[in-house]
Figure 1 (cartoon, helix red, strand yellow):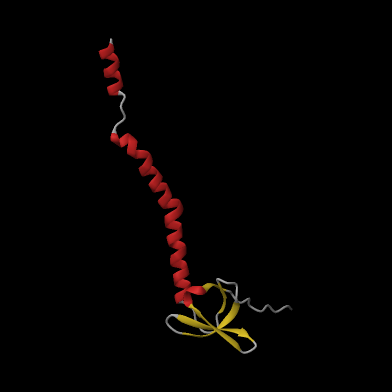
Figure 2 (figure 1 turned 135 degrees about the vertical axis):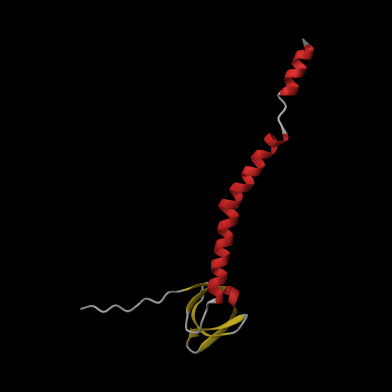
Length: 106
């Protein structure tokens, strides 16, 4: 009778595939829910920062609003009004503010 119990326990031992499957599924879920969207956002930010041009209205990561006065490969000069110009790295630009088109009322 003891031999029968030992055989049943040996047959019930999980396989290595059964043990690794939850970890593999968790890695796939993390990739599609966390890693891939973050890569897409980073790619969009890099594209926006490379497409900056003189005259764009921008907001920095610190919340400073201004207009791009000049730019070079790694930095930009922002006109913040009153003749003041500040120099920032391109990576400090959070987004480009879209200028509203003037509407004409009839």
